[in-house]
Image (cartoon, rainbow, N blue to C red; front, side, top):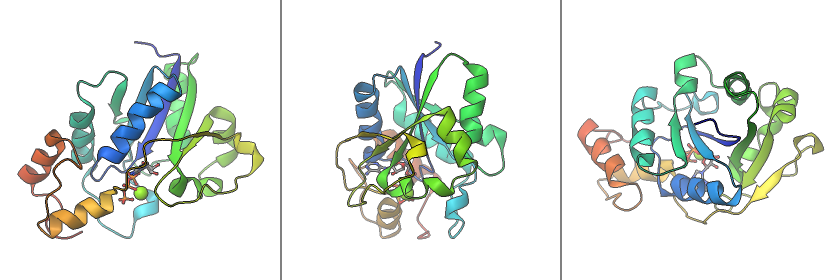
Length: 196
Ligand code: ATP
Ligand code: MG
């Protein structure tokens, strides 16, 4: 497939959950994109304060989560590239692969507040349309006009990876908050039990 319109939905996905997945499914429909690509960050430079699950495992969780869902895909492009994950590098790599594709970069309102500090922000603003979604109580920030931001309202699900990690560490169930395929891998691999 050679999508003409592609949404890049980046995240740490430690672990992926129904908030991400319901948003991705809605985005695909609302933005009329051929594919929403959940791009798994290799080395999330904004999260150095805690130990992050190895990228290969997070990718496998995302792959399992979207399996069988048409129009949703997991991408390990940032993992294969290695090093710090910058969205502009991912967008440029996509441009090389698919020069004719229109690229949208989706961020939740919480992540959007940092956009102006992102690596090579001007080039990112020129290369992609930024779509900001609602995220819990996070207010959509005022952003510099260079971003030409679009907004998209996604299902409002109060779920976070942080809360899921806390639940696993406390022995609480995460059933229905993540797909079964994700839950069983978390259990099998013993993820998050140490409370990080
Ligand atoms: P953590 O608690 O570890 O930060 P998270 O749940 O915020 O995890 P991330 O991987 O940091 O998940 O988020 C990736 C993207 O998904 C971000 O743009 C974020 O705003 C968005 N997102 C995460 N959870 C939700 C949700 N419940 N509803 C809508 N968007 C979400
Ligand atoms: Mg987050």
